[in-house]
Length: 241
Image 1 (cartoon, rainbow, N blue to C red):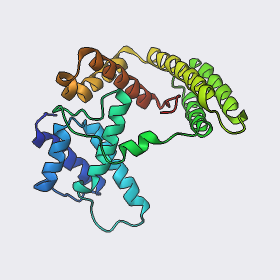
Image 2 (image 1 turned 180 degrees about the vertical axis):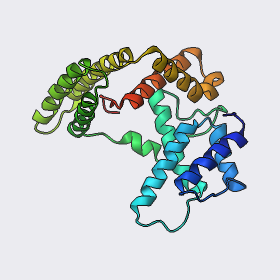
Image 3 (image 1 turned 180 degrees about the horizontal axis):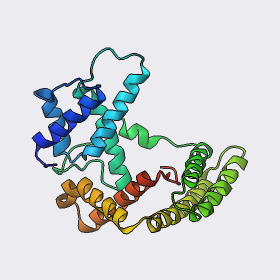
């Protein structure tokens, strides 16, 4: 796909058409400006698609659909998913491909939330069990599951929840388990699969290459690769955000 706004908008228009069950809503005029800003800010197509999916998921929950969705209505969700992606790969929320811009709607509120460790670990354990059943990374995953199970028991045993140093220590242990899991995951993938992941990283971050220090860009690439490996293998992030 080309990098010009018209090519980007054409991809978005095609995806929106599929989401609208074949009903074509042209991305022109103000809608073209909205999508062009996504492209100018470096929103990868995959992230834009995820934001559109999020908007449609909420639309479906409201009941029977009455009219096709315009791309303008997806803007806030695309921006939110873009912020989440930038946070995950270590890109500053105030950085866009043009060197400016601000975080999306609700970013500060999301960052301020403190997740429940037991609930987080319950979800992690379920996803790891599913990954083991699917044979994602073989026996190496058993060690990770056992570690998460121990930490889940620790979190459950605290009568008022883990706080302060105890919480930080548990999160540190989970982060170490997470690194072990990702190493095992990468070792389980063949060379071509890893090259495909690396190409996806290049596509996602190319727009930011010229606006970041070399060491920061290298860290972002590593974080993006970890995220893509997780997605491909269906693995969770062990430590809460």
